[in-house]
Each structure stands twice: as C-alpha cells, then as structure tokens.
Amino acid sequence: MKMNIKNGWPLAGNRPITDFLEKSLANGKVAHTYIFLGPKDLGKTAAAVFFAKCLLCQKQKIGVFSLACGACPSCRQMQNNPGADNGFETLHGDFHLLKKEAEKKNISIEQVREFIRILEMSSFMNSYKVGIIKEADDLSESAANALLKTLEEPRPKVVIILTAARLEKIPATIVSRSQVLNFLPVSNAVIYDYLINDLACPRVQAKNISRLSAGRPALAAKFFEDQEFYQSYLSKTETFLHFFKENLNERLSAVDKIAGGKEEENKVEAALDVLNVWQGLLRDLLLLNANNGDLIQHEPLRAMMDGLKNKLNGSRLLELNGLLRRGEKYLRANVNPKLVLENIAINI
Ligand SMILES: [Zn+2]
Image 1 (cartoon, helix red, strand yellow):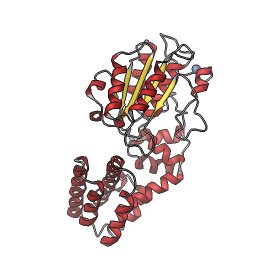
Image 2 (tube, protein in one colour):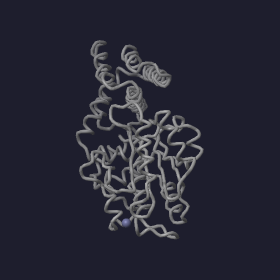
Image 3 (cartoon, protein in one colour):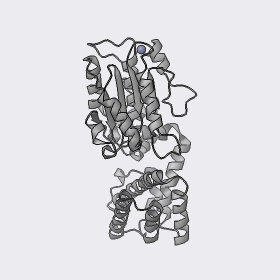
Image 4 (cartoon, protein in one colour):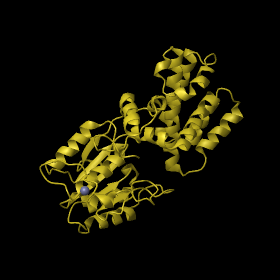
C-alpha cells in the first residue's frame, strides 16, 4: 500500500485511533500490548507497522509526538524490503512481523517461540523492540499460551501489537492484558478523498472503487493499484448474478470452483467472504428494486443487475435474503462450507 497519506499515517479514517496513539507516544505512555481489532482491509497492519516505525525512529523524543523522520538509520531500515511479497517485511533488527505460513491452519507454537526469542534479545539500536502478530485470531491454543507467558511478564520497551478481526477468538487472558483499539469501517466519502488525494485516482474510478470497497480503504487501494485483482474480484462477484440464468449443474460446478481446494479452516472464512459479497449484491438488487440506484455498491455490475429486474421482484429478493442469512448462520455453526454454498445454489 502507498504510504503518502496527508497526516502521515498510511491509514484513511479512524482518526481517533491515530490521535490516541500519537498522544501515548508523546506522553511516553505506550502500552506493552495492543490489539488492533476490526474487519480485514481497514489498514490495521499498515497502521501497526507505521506506529512501530515511529516508536523506533531515532528522532523520537518524549514530550512531543513526531512522525517517523524517514531519514535516520532506523527509519531507513524500516522501509519495505523490496524483495518481500507482502510489503510489510523490513530489514530492521528490532522489528519482527509474524503471520501464519501459507497453507498452515494456525500460527504455530514454534513460530511464537521464535517471535518471543527475537523480542527478548537486547535492542540493536538501544531502543524499543516491536513485534506484530498479523491475524492473531489464527494463533493455535498452545501458541496463544506461549504468548500469554510473555505478556504476563512484560519487559520494558518491548511492544507487541496483535491485529485481529474477531476478539472472541483470542483468549480472554490475552485480551485483558491488552489495549484494544477498535478500527471501524470508513465512510465512502473518506475513501473517495483518499483515492483522489493520496493515490491520484481519477474521479470516475474513485467513485466506483470507493463504493465497491464498502468501507475498507486497504481494499480500495488494492482495487486501484492491482487491475488484475480488481477484475478477478468482479468476475467472482458476477458468479452470483449468473446463478439466475444457469441450470442446476452449472450452478453446482460454479460452487465447486469457489469451495474446492484449500484446507478446512480457510474454507469457512473463504465461504463467509463469498456470502458477504453475495449479500452486498442482494442489497444492491433491493436498492434497484426500490429505485434507489444511486446508493448501490457494485456500479460496474449495474447493467447486469438491471437485466435481472423482471426475474427478481421484491418478495423473491426477500426470500433470497433469508436464504443467504441462513447460509451465514450455518457457516458460523461450522457446517461444511461446500454443503452450505451448494444448498444456496440449489434453492436459489
Ligand atoms: Zn527516523
């Protein structure tokens, strides 16, 4: 993600949180552990990395908040490692970012032990040491316990930031030792301004993308910067609209494409994401049905949705809404994701 946001933070919206963090830093009252909580794609990890960069900056003084200077040796080492695939890996010895390994179910106890070992070594630059655990909802039980031991005996100048979407998946014993900061979805207008002012996005595109990203600035940035991702998102989204023109076999094979592959834990999350997108489309169809087309989220798919107008009247749309809601309930109750999506494809 690009980092040239006006107020210094690589984050659109959520100003109360950045104000709070700036104040803590200026007063020298930094917590040992933070949980950056909120739905994905709000920019939590980018904000955590930037906060780490400010903490580690050698120009930082107690009593005044200043943004990371960008020029000291520490800031230079915090610049993205050009070889890294996720944009958040750095060469800084006092900074460590931990995330789940691809294709693994959880963040393992071995990974957490290594994370703690690195944080317990003395600082390279005689400053803070900062560790981030991305998507800490994925900590295995034993990994969470290992982390808890460290949180129970906090070391001075060691700061740990967990990012998470669901607080209930983190043990209460960890939550109670953390400063929880709630990241909220951002208004379309803020995302629109962010796209235009910070990313130099053309206006028409900014209008479409700001609506499509439904309150998630990091997703908006990705839509703008990665055309391939944008197109593939739209074509996945279209799948749902195709359902209304396809026969049962075609619908079931579409579900197979969505729910095939990947291992179990990720399948539930992936299916929830799919349902979420479908629910967004259904809201659009309801808005179009009520002649409120100005408010729809998926403007690029408008012509396709208009084409379905005679097939989908108000009561049919409400039925579909019930069908998707039941699907979500089953997924949250751990019913097999493929079965849930197939059930929707059959009853649509
Ligand atoms: Zn600096």
